[in-house]
Length: 99
Image (cartoon, rainbow, N blue to C red; front, side):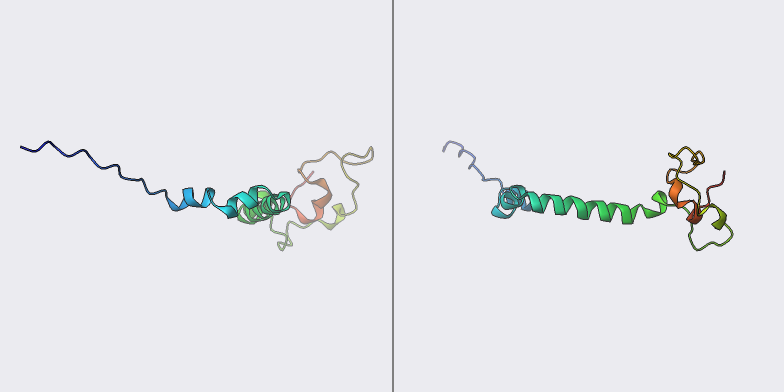
């Protein structure tokens, strides 16, 4: 009888993602501060566009919530300013926030 054959060492195929991270493009990208900063800015823009309904839930075209008399109010951090009820008190004319 013959002895059982030793299992062949099968080289694991690195996935496409592993090949990408081991490649020259990823190396050059991680060494370039301009590429990294621009990617972060693009990601901030994309995330703000995706989550825009939650970041600014008001409808600026709804005239019933528009209060133009608040348009000339000073910012809340000034002594004559009113306490802020919104997180962005300088945009009170476009929001539905009320005092």
